[in-house]
Image (tube, rainbow, N blue to C red; front, side, top):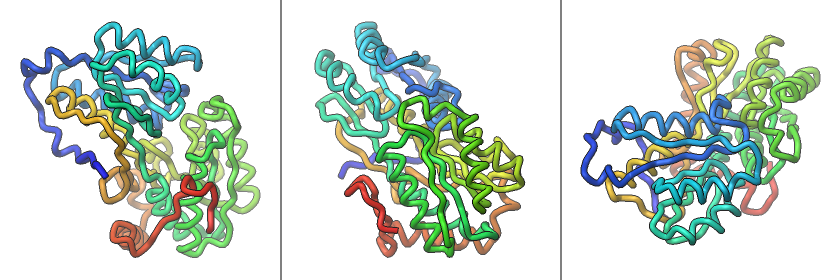
Length: 329
């Protein structure tokens, strides 16, 4: 398996080389928008880091509906943007159609796999990171009932949920209450409904709730904080959204994936192919900072670090829901 070398420390500031003149990077976000405080915003942060370190501007666009996908891809490619990164699995059909029409343009897609000699497909082992935060959730819970609020009901989000259940139950949770927000893309951007679901789970006894729901998760974290319970963020570090009320966030390093796609193209190192990034590749993790350090005890952190090491070593095997569309936990 090919691996992207992740790690922000590899990203030292570079001068704009002669090769860089041929690079006109672009990023097109998924529904939910650039500033969703989660998945899309992580991608934006990676693009911003590249711009800051290289001085190279990038172009970006927020689609408003699915019909704009193919149009946007073709427009960016025709304008000479290269590489073009699209954020989210919903881009797959449009990319399959557009990429062959522009064989000299480098494309990258996040969260699914699309075959093509000029396409880099980047997927994450979200189940591993979710297992980790599940361990922390169960250890922080006094009721031993924890919750999970997913966004759109698709196998990818079930993958988050299944990993979370595995970690929570391994650490002593007796019940994991699970709900999805909806079955359309609107489920990614409905914080009001997210808050309502969180309140329902709290009424059922959940005192730690993990949101894997894009912009909807902001409402979940708000509702948990308002009720004096704990939330768990996702994708970006969301600990600061409700300081002292977010136990941790499951980091999904979309920012690094975007940064690397831009940087590799700039340095003529862009390779197509499939990349799967988990704990071993620093593709997922849990977030610690000044906002949650008082919530995570030394015992909890030690348990999380041991779990992480065991997953990397293969001692703990976290089930991937997408391998069989089932969850054994």
